[in-house]
Amino acid sequence: MSIVAVMNYKGGVGKTTLTANLGGEVAKRGHRVLLIDLDPQANLTFSFYSLPQWHEGLDQRTIKQWYEGDIPGREVPLSELIVTPEQANDAISDNGGRLDLISSHLGLIDIDLHLASKLGGTTLQESKRRYLTLHGCLRRALQDKSFDDYDLVLIDCAPNFGLVTKTAIVASDHVLVPAKADYLSTLGISYLAGSCDKLVEEYNDYVGHGPNDGTSKINPRFLGIVFTMVKIYAARPIGTQQNYIEEVRANAGLPVLSTVMRDSPRHYGDAGARGIPAMLTAPMSDDVATEFRHLAEEIMQQISLEKGGQR
Ligand SMILES: Nc1ncnc2c1ncn2[C@@H]1O[C@H](COP(=O)(O)OP(=O)(O)OP(=O)(O)O)[C@@H](O)[C@H]1O
Ligand SMILES: [Mg+2]
Image 1 (cartoon, helix red, strand yellow):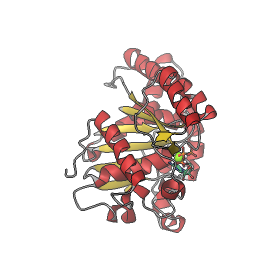
Image 2: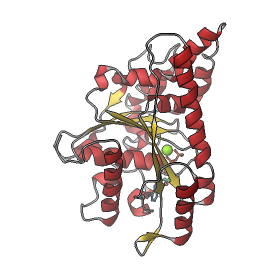
Image 3: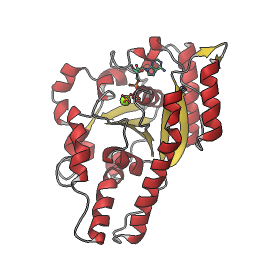
């Protein structure tokens, strides 16, 4: 199983749209995929369920309930929150593939503060123990055997670097960074990489010098930056966007994926309004879908997931 955090603390760069469509594309190829919505905006959740559907009980089974309480997961095991969106799965061919979801809740917005209040302690050892317990909570939960069945877990992060997002980074083997090819979106990318490196260093330092409770060190790898909403003209990104892409490639210190996600309001613009990611319904011959398949293949190759059609 590969666990990939999709993150960028810049908002509106296409994180959720990429997560939903990548999940759909990988599931269509016969893999079992779990999507986790860690954003209080719950856009990923509402890409699969309408608000009335969500109020039919789903609102009582969200990641917010899991993070609540003294220690995340004490009230309810993570696996009990898994749901299988029906419409999207109906669009996946019958080859063993499945797309599951752990949904979010607007109330998740208060959880960062709640978790932060659990940090600290009367001794240094106690502080380190609590730090590792909280930051490593999602990592431990996903190691449970009930998740063994999944080939891929995609975590859609909120546009911030709060504690909940940090639990996703700690849980992940890979980090994928969607970004728009414009000035403001590319500004923060190297800072983002630095923040992740700092978190990993701090966590591993605490593992090394903290309580000897079997917690292991982490080593999430940057899969790279995926440029999204790229305007293509004559088979290439338009000039201004190409310049930003080149600049990031040269200076950000992170890999840049060679495939981009094209700007296509027709495919991605009404993200979620139909309850099915666009890539699950687009015809095979569709240009934008073909490009997206190449992007999915590039990512699958990097995380060593078979491209194939059958499990
Ligand atoms: N490739 C694309 N082409 C056209 N529109 C897109 C594309 N990708 C995303 N969009 C649209 O851009 C908007 C923002 O996308 P999305 O919600 O995926 O971004 P996000 O990074 O998850 O945002 P947030 O930071 O708020 O979570 C949405 O309205 C979506 O439909
Ligand atoms: Mg989002």
